[in-house]
Length: 134
Image (cartoon, rainbow, N blue to C red; front, side):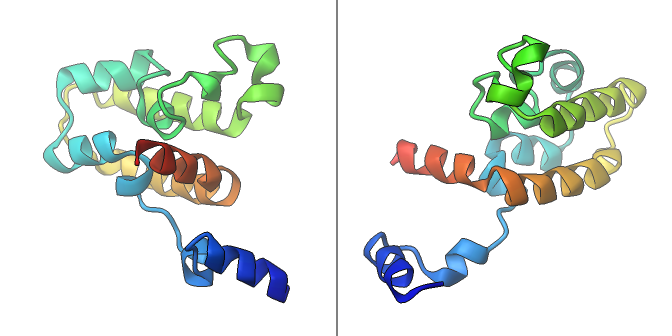
């Protein structure tokens, strides 16, 4: 990192440590993080399986629907993310298969993989959403 870049980061109040810190589920998806801790209701599982805008991946994108290319698959490469679409579908499938089970352990692997992808490709979206709430 060049000195001028470091100076700019310090002016913005961002430390180098903060830039390399991994975002947690609580930071990326606070609503779904709370739901996962207490257990998913039948309504929560229905949302995960059927409503991509309000699912866990949708919350990460700010409930905009951008993760699905505004619901038009050909636009995904331009406005959304195909990998996020795949994670949303996988979580929906997991939710449907475990619909009568309140155990969230099946989601842990998917959530860990999704968070790794999110931190590598989209962490700027979370940072912008947090900044906009202030």
